[in-house]
Structures are given as C-alpha cells and as structure tokens.
Length: 302
Image 1 (spheres, rainbow, N blue to C red):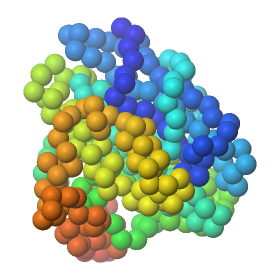
Image 2 (image 1 turned 120 degrees about the vertical axis):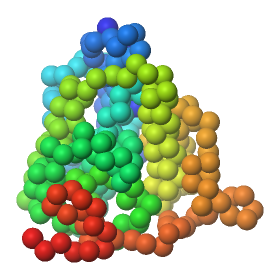
Image 3 (image 1 turned 90 degrees about the horizontal axis):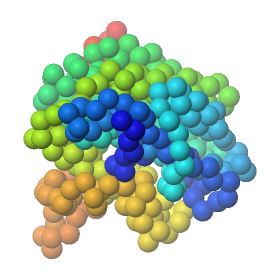
Image 4 (image 1 turned 180 degrees about the vertical axis):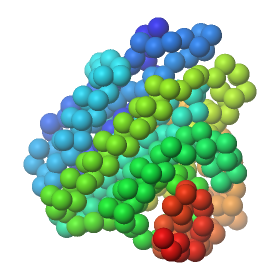
C-alpha cells in the first residue's frame, strides 16, 4: 500500500536560513504493509539551506536523502524547514527522531536524539524495547560530544538515555564527528522503523497520537529555540513558523492545550507561566550512567 503522512516531517537547517533563497523541498512516502487497514509507516520530509552560510549541513542533508531513498520513495513537498525531525504515524510507538542544530561563527548548540514517545522513567518496557541495544551508540558519542551544560528537569523527560546535548566550537573535526553521529543515529532510527509493527488496537493508537500531541505542545510552547527565532524573524512570524511548520500537527492531532498537559504552568490569571522551569532543577552533568539508568545529579565514576 502506498501512503502519505500529513502528521510529520523531516527537516534540518540553521534558523538564519528562514526567508532566504535556494530552498529545496522533499517529502517521502513508502510502499509498505497494511496492518488490518489501520495504517503504515509514513513520514514527510523537507528542508532549506543557505548557500552563503559559513557552515553547511549539506552533507547531512545528502546523506539523509540518499539513505532514506533506500527505504522509501521521495516526492515533492510544499513544506519549509528549520530543524530535522521524523514522526511515525500514530499506529507506531516509535521514538521521534530529533536533530536540532544551531550554528554561529564560533559556537554550535546541538541536540540529537531519538526522543521517547512514552515516559521511559515510568515505562521500563518501552525503554527496553527501543533503547537497550542503542546504549553503546550513545556512549560512543557522549564521549566525543560532551554534555552541554544545564538542562531542566522538564525538558529531560522528553529526552532518551542516548541523547546528545552538546556545545562545541566550529572546526572540521567537530563537524566531522557530528556528521558521523547524525548518520549513525538516523540509521538506527530507520532500522527501528523497518522492524516495527503497527498497532491495531484503537486505544493504543489514540494513546500514541496523544503522546505525539503532548510532545508537540511542549515543544511549541517551551522549546529553547524560540528566543533565537524571535530575535531573527520577529515574534509574530516566529509563532507562525513554530505552530504551522516546525511543530506542525499541534493544532490538528488533538484538542488539549498546553495547560491541559502541564497545569503546573498556569498563572493566577489563567495564562501560561513563561518560566523555562517550574521545578527549578537542572542537570549540569549527564544524568544517565553507562547502562542507561537515570542517576540524576550523581556523577558516575567509570
């Protein structure tokens, strides 16, 4: 069955690329098995790149396109781009592939992960299912790309034990390591996709859909890149890009609001508290040990 998804996208770029020329866009579909006519593994893809930028992610884009083309079919897409993400259809409880790269002349701020769709702190079976065999991969790159500093407790619940959160200065070596990490993580995600089996139970499909919507709702409201976007393109356009492109689906996948999911952020006047963290707790060091177990503030001696 050939199918297309309107629930997700792939994208990667520097935020400063917005509104610049030289846009190239793609979407992807695949011929895949039907699971009792419920659904199939389909996502869509797009990106933009700026040829005048000092740092190019063109190698990452070309790799993603070539690698994806071995698993699926590519076709034109009307979407535009800022980050790189991959969402499965709700019939699948796959993690969400996420690559957020922001580059300046001197500094790179990087998040690369297979974001868990469900809570791995409480659902050990989900963690075991998708991350047990990837811990070695995460350890490899956590040594090459060290922890990037404080990360709030609230943000942490959307990351996996193999997350790469790092900052580094621009250099050919560092970008070569990043490219290698991107390739390995993306291939790992595609491998999970190929091996996954779709749900036929309506309640579980609804649960997966709500989990995606909760993730999108959090990112669209509290994503740390919002400040950068606002400074680059203004508040109104930034909001439009966030809700209609970057986190496309936040207005379609569900009816719950940010405060429905995260009531602790409600102010007395009913508005959303703009604080990044309500718990006030952050992690200066990597909060998982070499076995992928959450250790919080404790520093593991290896």
